[in-house]
Image (cartoon, rainbow over all chains, first blue to last red; front, side, top):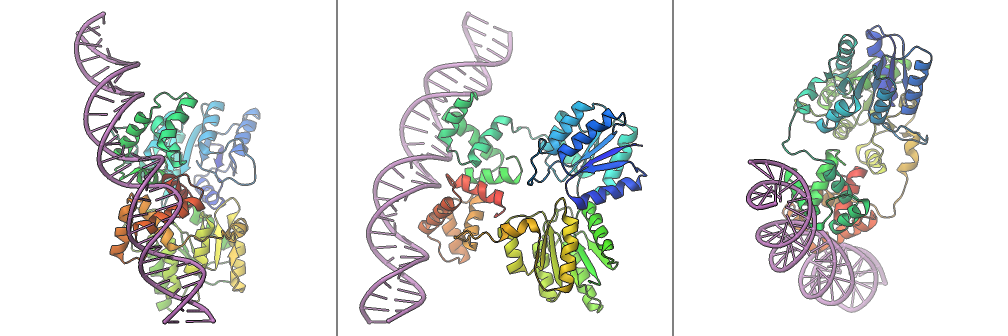
Length: 222
Length: 222
DNA sequence: CAGTATTTTATGGAAAACCGTAATGTGATA
DNA sequence: TATCACATTACGGTTTTCCATAAAATACTG
């Protein structure tokens, strides 16, 4: 079982819940940080003290407040921790349920487990901890397991996201091409932009561009 | 102090946190429901048993799952509970931080307190409980207090929200008028719809309608 | 390298959105 | 009832978006 655990989570109420889970597993040596920066510093200090953590449980989104921070999101924290201490096990504990996002966490950020916050998530969290303590398998919340492997033949790429973002900022289609040209982004003709937007409308079954942006917002793509 | 408390909150981790807060206040008679429907049934049963709750702590948004529900959101739950048992104290405990929404909870749904989930929210929750137990004052999280009284000279009304909602659903401006006519909603000419949208664009400093809907989504108005 | 497919760009016309202005309707007031 | 203020509707012209088609550029293949 894990010997030393760090929890990065801003909400105090959830921290109390996680704490309970850890106690149930007889893990007594744990700390938590309400800011990513703090968490990272704790990780680094523990290494210097030759008492490194062997598990990180991290939320993904952190509220912003008066305090200025270097690491603003769990995504960033996880990536930096992975770089700092490659062998540590990392569990993301979040409400995020977009396959697109979770897949990326496994593939790009190198998490070992993903637990979806919800009605039964403390049990899931315990399961994840138990599994990762003894195995190098991945753990994924049961609810997510199906979502994560959905292969929508057409994958939204970064270019699509860029366009959606511009649209949501109120940039007219004509100007998007110009903006891209300035930024050195390759396809940038009015025509191509139009075509992509049409494809996105089609893909998301949106009636018009306003609808498209509303959907993209709902899905958290932008 | 409150004798009997009901907590409506779907996340188990947060429930554990709230539980801790109640224990700290020496409140031992409390239950929690992970679904609004359950919460409402519990409230009703308690009245029939002549042992009604005297405090409801409710989240606002509940995840949807396989289960079919009548009451889907904390907003609805609160309104129905207020109708069922007018004298009960109700605290909304949520991440919602839009002044527009919170104001409406006080004015239309009749909550007595609002506590914003966050890094120090359990303490705030305790304060709210302590205050409402002895007084009929409103309690509002300190962070929110400022936001809530911002008086934007122009108030977005229900008609505006209706239009924004239609737009976000992909209904073309021409058709919105027609839709309103069918529903018997009064101003419904193409011209008026146009004018209102223009006013909203102006108010939110949106470059175009796509931008407007993106902003409205961000602000949680729709 | 020629030939073919795919992507990007260009173009023009139709539809929708945008914008100002004028006409009409409605309610309050004296 | 007359008048004023204001909201609603109507209308026309301009801009932007939408959509189909075609040309040009690029990538792929034998």
